[in-house]
Structure formats: C-alpha cells, structure tokens
Image 1 (cartoon, helix red, strand yellow):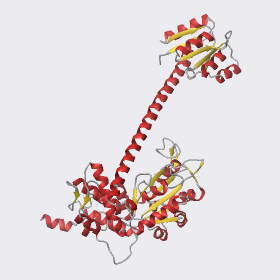
Image 2 (cartoon, helix red, strand yellow):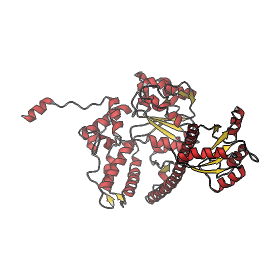
Image 3 (cartoon, one colour):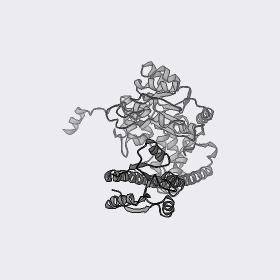
Image 4 (cartoon, one colour):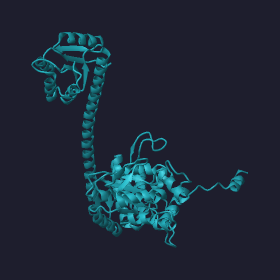
Length: 499
C-alpha cells in the first residue's frame, strides 16, 4: 500500500464519517470538507495526494469543483475520484470529461473504495517518478551536450592552430564529426571535389577503396554537407553481422517473428529515417538479402521481419566496399541490378601508397593528435623516421598509419619522434608489381603478410588486427570471406627438431 493524504469532499456527514473510518484503518491521512468552496481554498493551500469528490452538492456541485481544480497549475495533476449515488452512464461520462480519473458509487463497498484509491495512488507515484527522472535526464543531457561542445570546440581549435603552424591549413577540410580529410595529393583533391558535387544531392553513393582508406570518414563528410546533416547517420557493417541477423538489423522485426524475438526491434533503416544510412562492406551482403535492399533503393519501402505493415524509407544511402563487385557479378555472387542502383555516383578512394604527398601531412596530424591525447609535447618527426614512413607501402592504408604513429608517440621520450622499433618493416610487405591485381587479391595478400609477420596472431598487442588497423572481429570476417586459414604445422620438421 502507498501511504498518502486523501481529501474527501461530501455534504453528507455520514458519508464523510464512513469513508474516514475505511481510509484511516488503511493508514491514510484524512482531510474533509462539506462544501466545494471551502475545499478548494484548503486544497490550494496544501494539495493532497488524492481527492474523493461527491457530485451532488448544494451551491457548487462536484463537476464545477473538478473543473476549477484542473484549471489550477498546482492542483491539475491531483487525481480525482468521483462519489455518486447515481448509476447513469451519462453522469459517469461527464465525470471523466471534467477531469475525473475514476468513480465509486454509494452505498460504499470498502474493498472497492480501497482498491480504486490504491490503483490511482500507484499511477500517480509512477508519474511522479517518471517526471523526476525525465527532469534529471533532461538536465544531465543538457550538461553533457554543453560539456561535449565546449571540449570538442576547444580541441578542434587547438589542433587547427597547431596544424596552421606547420603550414597545413590549405589541405585540410573538416566534417562535422570531427574527422579531417587531408588532401594535398591530386587524387584526394579530386575526391574532395566529388564530395562537394554529390553532397547536396540525395543520390546514392558507392565508395570504393581498400581497407583503411577512410571510407567512413568520406561518408560522414558527404552526410555533413548534405541537406540531411541535422539528422542522424546510421552505420551498418554488413561484414560484421552474422548472416542470420542482417535482415533483422537492417529492417527490424516484430515480436515472435522468430525464436528469440521477445520484443519488437526497430531496424537501422527505420532509425535513419530522414537521415543517412551508411552500408559498409556492402559487397559482403548475402545474396538472399540483396533483393530486399534493392526494393528499398527502388521503391523506398520495406517490411519488418514477421511484419504485415509496409514502412516507408526516407533515407539517403551511402555504401562502401573493398571488393570487386563486377567480378562478384560475373561469379553470380552479386546482383547486377543492385550494383547499378548502388553505383549511381561511384567514388574511388586511392590507397595511401598512391597518395605519397599526403603521408607526411597525415603523419604530422596523427602525431599532434596523440601527443595531445597523451599529454606529451612532440614538436616534429625526425627526417630518418619520416623517410621510413614514406618508403613503406602501407597495406593497411590511413588506419595503419594512424596506429603506427600512436605506437610511436606512446614510446617517444623526447620532443621529436625518432626512428625506432615502432616503425613498420618494409621488407615484410613488399607489393607485387608484375601485374595489376584486384582489390580483393591485394587485400588477401596484405592480410596474409600481416598474419605471417605476427606469427598468425590475430588479436591483442602485436596482433595482425592492430597492425592493419582493424577490429579483430572484422579481420576474422575478412579472413573467412577470403578463405584465409592458418597453415597446418609441418609434422616432419617438428619431429626432426624434437629428435
């Protein structure tokens, strides 16, 4: 039972006495009045938790009293239970229309009276808790938003000033997410021009590039310059989701639509409504789901798994892949019609080895970033270290460079990033030049060499995932997709060494 104060208004002293007896026995505090005017004055001075209000009273009936209570800012939320000897449906309807939440009829049944009161007090208690929690959450959210904006603006300003000091201002374009696109090389300048041309449209964009070239950064730059920039950009990693869950993640599902579907789930397309959805690794989308994605692109609609209602999708689609989709089409692993729908505006990102003019700028930017993050004062990269960075082919592209620089900054003891063990080993990653390879072939070769370099250690410190700048789950998914398996140990060699 929820304790509280109950104000009973009835012109009949016998009714007041009976209700007071019932309620006091349950531990409620009781206040009483025999007229509406006197009750209103007392309630405004000290509002109770609940009001029991007789309908038929002289001078001012219960309906009029309730209307005045609902008009007052301090009394409008107090639940009112009407008391009536009348059993007419119209009287009950009028009671609810004037603001009542329930009613009891005379003669009183104690258990009914108590049950209705306790029910309304529980509802009121829950409402108060929710109001308090919402107020606290709103306040906390405002504080967090203000703090985040202040910190982000300070960091961005400080970093930009540092970059200007080393003469990089003219080659940096920032998107609203805080990522910065370094574009001194002709290839990247062309990418920036393409971003500016397509961002203002709602056209589907297909970003093509090797792992680690910054496809998500480019997607966010397009979104941040579009008419949808004030709405969300929702990311989906098609390679990182189990095949059985991709449809549910993209389109959502209804409760009970499959084993384990204990509640309705809103899908990513629904979450991205009026915004942008970024479909990363779109080349890994299972063939059976490609038709459903095609429907969204063609007709702008989809169904939740197990649902009967067709939902509209007001979403701008940006997709990305490191696979050769035309080859996948020839191998009947990818739908040609979906490819054409995705390939409205193709945007190819050059690998880092083909944009050597950006390596030094990126290295300096990452050095400043991690030095600031770790509280170090590192002013420059030594010529020998920079020479090693420029000579390395960067199979993991920008992400690998960022991870290597972070390692160097962690190990750095002075004000200059010197050459050392943190630098990558060029010989372990020599690239073939005898023939042109596909993106998928290059990726397979890079992953194999990274695994060999780390002794086939996938995750953890010194693992191939760290070296390539990938999450372990993503690397494992790519290994499975590319058919990369750890070679079996040479038993004969093992036997000879043991003898």
